[in-house]
Length: 282
Figure 1 (cartoon, one colour):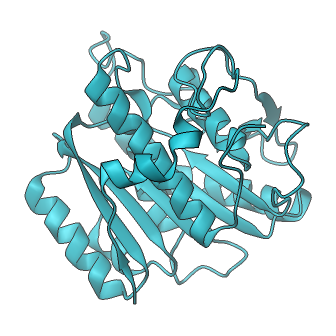
Figure 2 (figure 1 turned 180 degrees about the vertical axis):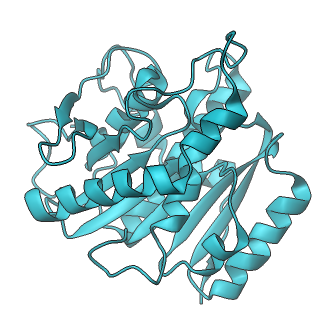
């Protein structure tokens, strides 16, 4: 087993060209677009009615991109209504990966303001438990493998979606039913057995001031990962709170640095275990 560690500075140093490439991407000069208009398309699966946001590498992308790989982006509770989620999916596409974001909430994600009158987070999470979201993810994986001919899938799970990324690395699923590798940022609601049953490499990004994942829980998750004998890495980002990797206030230099670093952590992991995308300008 190999345990991998990564510092923020090492991540950025390895991807200097990626983070500062002079590429005009939707008004942003980085492959990671924090602002702008999402560039993907929406598709409704005929057999299930599931809505997918689909985004892929530019048409003029270099030929070395792997046509048989894809990323399934498992979002936070704000789902497809959050531009931050769609822009992050577009950024994975710019890195060379077909990226698909399933609507885990059937058109009813959480409001951007969780204090909205009438919204109850506990009820929302109960309505969208794994029994409701697992079939959506399973159908998306089936679509990727059966309809698009994808042979290797990486899961990028953020917050709420992080738990699902672990669940679909489960060794009780057949190779066709599960993902091959996962990157997970600030996972919430994660249970011990969901960590212990993984059958594939996983990279985790934690916030050091996460109201949903305490320092003790972080240590427990890391110990559980060690028990799995799978390849893993764990990074802890200072000055961050829950949600930083997907929806940080990028006007804050420290938070922008952390968000970009977590994205680069994901890209390096996918390049190592999923298949190389593209880490430069085109």
